[in-house]
Amino acid sequence: MTNKRRAFMKKTALLSLGGAAVSSLGFAATATSQAEGTAQNIRPKVLFFDVNETLLDLTTMKKSVGDALGGRPDLLPLWFTTMLQYSLVTTVGRQYNDFGVIGAAALQMVAANNGITISEEDAKTAILTPLRSIPAHSEVKEALTQLKQAGFKIVSFTNSSNIGVETQFKNAGLIDYFDERLSIEDIGKFKPDTDAYDWAARKMGIAPKECMLVAAHGWDIAGAIWANWRGAFISRPGAQLYPLADKPEINESNLKLVAEKLIAMK
Image (cartoon, rainbow, N blue to C red; front, side):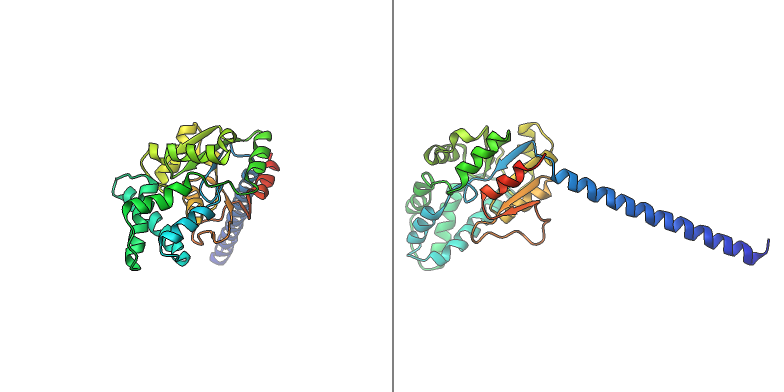
């Protein structure tokens, strides 16, 4: 056999193997895509619900905080992001304070930076008093009823304290909708720390991929997805998903629309 003939046969064999490899990779990608699509059509074993803003309407509390800030509603987003920032600072520093206490401290910080004087007691009153008695969003009870009737296990999962969310649910008439209530108070690490989601999954005795978080905060959905949970985002006014995180499989404007998609799953 000539050298040219050997070279031709070798080249042909390599091209054939390369084609097989490409075909194999294409099949694997298709299989993965199909598996992911199938997973999205399977019901999660547990639905975990964030509470504030997701289920409860914070309009009354926002007005109270705005009044405490000298009638400056434009400072509300800064207050909330400061509260979230320092909850994470607390977690990273291996400390723990009640979320409401951190919120009051953040309120004092924002006030001071804008020439407003507010005492620690007044800051707590501005947040905690209305927070305990805020109502549910208009569609929440109907949607939760439909989910329970459809056989979903429903658990609340919040950065608020145990007594705080219990009080909120009693006052909002939501206490009987939930199979369990989970608070990060019991682990001492705030969402979106991955350990918080891992703890909640273990608490319910299921794998992360069997959990779905329903939340109206992009940072919370991002944290859940990074912890290998599934996500359902409620795009309440002003809420946005984090562009650098994978998108959740459900994205709707209210809980009723989210519930319809969940109930349609097998």
